[in-house]
Length: 105
Length: 126
Image (cartoon, rainbow over all chains, first blue to last red; front, side, top):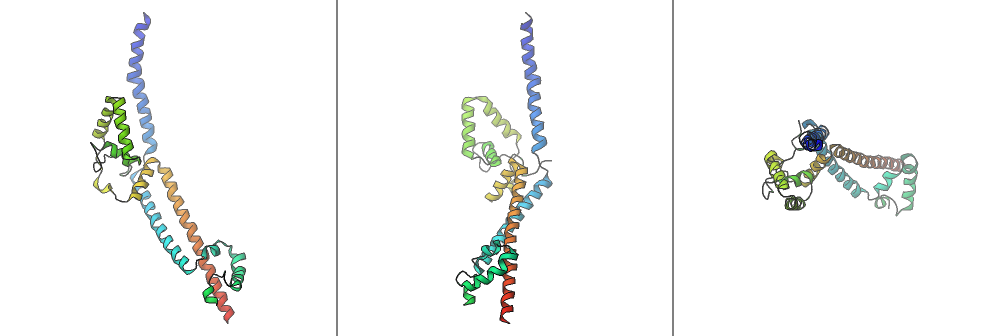
C-alpha cells in the first residue's frame, strides 16, 4: 500500500531532478576546463606559425651547411675543448677522412 | 568567451544532409565516413533518439565561417589537436621550438669550430 505511492514519486524525482542535475553537473565541469580564450587562441596560432617558419629556415640552413661540408654533424657533435682542436689536426693528416679533402691536396 | 577556431560548427561545404557529421569529423579529426556510419547505425538501433540528437545539433550549432575553411591540412590538423587538448598542443609547440633550438646549436657549434680551424690554418701558413 505504501510502496504504490512511493515508486512513482521516486521515479519522477530521478527523472526531473537527478538526471538534469547530473547533466548540468558535467556540462559545467566540461565548460570550465575545456575552453581557451580568443587571446590564447591567437597566441597559439602565432606560435604555431612561427615554429613552422623557423623549422623551414633551419632546414634551409642545414642544407646549406650540408652542401658545404657533408661531415659537419660529426664535427658539431664533438665537444669543443677536446675534439675540435686536436682531432681537426688528425683529420687533416689522415687525408681521406678529412672534412675538406679537396682543399688540402 | 571561447575562441573562433575551437568552437563546433556545421560543415556545410562537405555536407550530406545538414552538415552535422562532416562538422563532427572536422572538429575531431575522425574520418567522415566513420561518423556517418555511426549515425546511421545509431539511428537504426536507437530509433528516434539519434535522429533527434542530429536535428538538435543542426539547429543549435552555427554554420562554419567562410574564412575558417583553410586549405592547409597542417593547419587543420593542428587546430584539431588544440580542440582535443589545448595543453598538449601547447606542449607540442614547445617541443618544436626546443628541436629548432637544438638544431641551431649544432649549426652554431659547427660554424664556430670551422672558423677556429680556418684561423689555425691561416696561422700555419704564416
